[in-house]
Length: 410
Image (cartoon, rainbow, N blue to C red; front, side, top):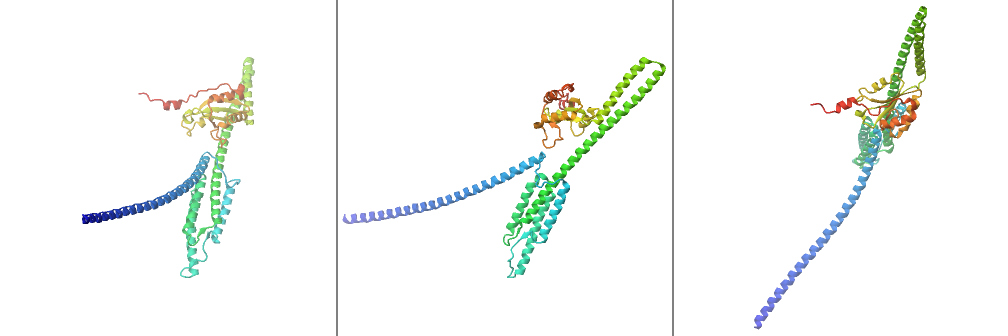
């Protein structure tokens, strides 16, 4: 029994020792796992913090880019409606051309005197400073050529609404060159870059000014053409009235010779009417403020809430409306009112001021379209035109438009 008890005790001790060992092994594994988990957690925390920093930087960059995009979009939108902010205020396109030529001479001088590119001066190749300087010069020329290619492209493709984007593109080109030439400290100088940016600004200003001058010249030619048409009309009317006057005077002489006094009186009344008409023609020729104010619309082209309020000095104002109804618009204009006035210029100005806040084109005052209904113009005319407003048609016929949009018959 004692031997069996000793054997059992030894066996129990052995098993207990084995269990203790296994427990220690398990505890060690758990501890190692815990340490690994702690390290992984710490690494994940560091990664998370790095990701958060990257997100913050990306958000900052995105905000800056969005701001630039918004600015560019606003500038493009303003340019589309004709609002252009000049960087350099000069009198005319010739002045801009002259300034550009002077600036281009300055740019060439900067390049010729080695002030366009900055670079390291202590670079050596195989211990040779001379070879190092030659390498730096060669790489500087290459970088400058790449930068100038970008700048010349920007000048060639310049449109006023693209100015900001082209300047930004040139700036990025300069940054890229600085990165590529960082080893030799090669970079485009501030003075050269600023000169080329001014060249882009002046080019944009020059193109805009040239377009404005062309538009002004077109307006002058159109006005001269209209005045010439008015003068031809007045000359034809004057010539016709003079012929009629001569005819009636000859008839009156013959009637007097025959002693037909009643007929003479009738003819003299006609002669007085002709003389009044001649005085009216001469008065209109002398008074440039005399004419017709017209109110017209084009529902098919511009909708039912837009009218054109203009002025014509023609004896037949409908000829001007027919001219406006040419190939530039898909349908003919409808006439709501034709108001003759000895101060048509003043009446037109009053109407334009009345609806100034509702101009379609708020930049070019020569464009006489307004976001108003014919009824609103009628109310204004009743205040300003008074007895001159004989008739006003509120509802446009728009025959061509209605015929074009109606369902085809089966």
